[in-house]
Amino acid sequence: MSEEATPDAGMRIDWDVPITVDDGLVLRADVFRPDDAERHPVIVTYGPYAKGLHFEDGYPDQWHAMCAEHPDVAAGSSNRYQAWELPDPEKWVPHGYVCLRVDSRGAGSSPGVIDPFSARETQDFYHCIEWAAQQPWSNGRIGLSGISYYAINQWQVAAQRPPHLAAICVWEGAADWYRDSAHHGGILCTFSDNWYRHQVESVQHGVGERGGRSRATGALVTGDQTLSAQELGANRVDFGADVREHAMVDEYFAPRIADLARIEVPVLSAGNWGGHGLHLRGNTEGFMRAGSERKWLEIHGLAHWTHYYTDYGREIQRQFLDHFLKDADNGWDQRPAVSLNIRHVDGTFVPRGEEAWPIPRTRWTKLHLDATSRSLSPQPLTEGATLSYPGMGDGVTFSWTLDSETEITGPLAAKLFVSSASEDADLFLIVRAFDEGGREVTFQGALEPHSPIAHGWLRGSHRKLDRELTLPYRPYHTHDERQPLTPGEIYELDIEIWPSCVVLPAGYTLALSVQGVDYRYSDRVERFGWFEMSGVGPFKHDVADDRPPSVFGADVTLHTGAQTPSYLLLPIVPAA
Image (cartoon, rainbow, N blue to C red; front, side, top):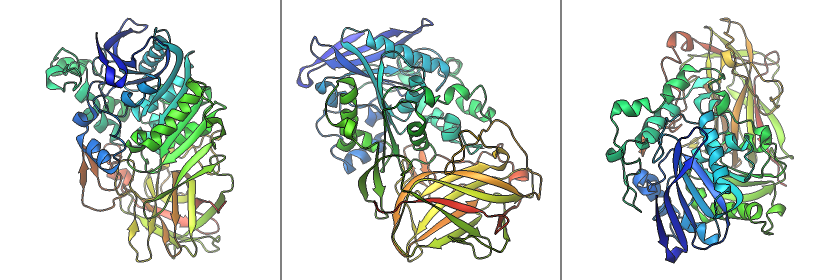
């Protein structure tokens, strides 16, 4: 452990501070604190990305793009201590906060076995929170903040109710690793495996000389030891294999699904409209289902990490944490429960407050699928019809041209009557927009630069609903047993489509594509870091073992009409 004083920033730094957890393992943490003798509230982060790795060294494309497009991110800081998805201490410590960064078990400077989002990790996080509350520089009031991984595990640990946890700021973080990431609608997503290999294994404790060095201290960011490939392998789980092997919600996924009702502390849940596949559903579900009586939802756009660092996002975070960690009378308690950045087709956003989510004045509108005309009709159909497509093909698209400007904001859903020529079928639902010239309109997603309005997924054999948690606008599937389809038999499928927001001008066309493969914006693949972008970013569903063509390649038939009223449910929001 070493110490550094930074007089210009009024900050003192303790490097690699030991935190001994209940099983005797020693985690390592960096402490950024005001250079005084006072006690201050503490912002704790716990995760696997190596606390000493500079943002720019680990993710240069993302750092350069963010700073070029949003110069306020880098302004007002030397940026010497910037790290991926963590608060910049130079923008928090001068305002009377301690920033505690903990490398999670097996990652960065902390030894042990890496097992992402496990009960063991959650217990470690709990101990770090309580350890921070007992330190001489702490006033005993602990807040949590961070993006993605550093947000996801906030839901998990808050549900364990650490006594000194006072507030959580969950910025773009899943709450349910099964439904939000690993198995969308029961369909295996490739993200877990790819993410783990690229972003976690690369900073595993023991990579040593093969890894990076801290810009601030010159120390190796993954510890002084350089272990062999065999030794490294023994100190980590095979996360991708674990996710593949557990196709249902079972004992493996149970600790990776937060018990949201147990959360009691104040919550700021911030999501991203473009976060389909990982960075949205958890924030809306967390807001709706958290047990806390003091909770707020904010949803924005742009790239995944951007607004956490902009003045806009940081000022929201600070007002929230000031109110609950410092008792600041700053008007936060008068803030609307829901703050939305309403998205327009030209890429602009208009901020607006609402009293609840979903928006209470929503007109829930059913657009009925017509297999004959391939249209979406606001009126129920009288005649029945069918339309078939190859089960692993591009499917069919149904459309509706708007005669007036229309805002769609909130969760979406679909009810489809489907039969398959085999024992199963994967349905990919994509809500899309086209301008008056027929050109598709896409948006900057959290990661993907060409995102449609919304995505939904369901594997036919996972159609079983949880009747207690299902809502009219948000089906909730149990994913606890496989119910094969009988070939040729018609099934009623309720499909969750993740929330979205867009204002479409008159003359635009809203479309629903029902298909058997991931959405593709174009055949041209764009690279951004290790991400490959062609329409769904890194959230692809193309694992051959999970989707054998002999089963999922069989023809799928959509049934529409009076006896089989397939429809898309839209949250149309009239002007206030």
